[in-house]
Length: 145
Image (cartoon, rainbow, N blue to C red):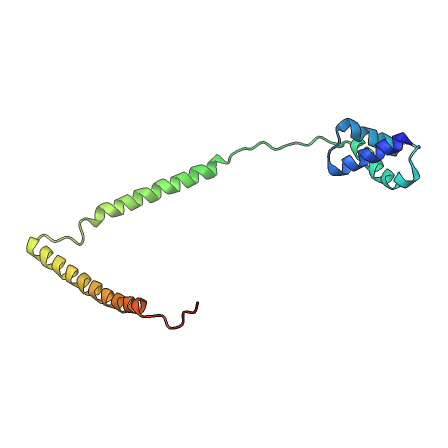
């Protein structure tokens, strides 16, 4: 009867994941044997399946394919990138100095015009912000404590 109590304790530890390999072998041997307590017979099928699964072996060896890089694919991508960089740099060299002025007075005049447009747009946006700030300074009538 004491061995049945020990098996019950081992079962509890087994289901909690606290048993050692030796204790699991003890459980497997007990449940695959013939002296199993009637109230523990429900576990016989489970442990006999574990024992059977442990004895199974794979009929063939598994061949793991070696990792072989496809260098032709990498070389073609690298060649494409080099060609694209070459074309891009060639196009940029031919672009020259577009958007520059040879006459200094014309350049100053165009810069003043650009700054004038930017100033006008900035003043319009700050006027809109002043309206928003007035809403923030207004008393809030719907605030309740």
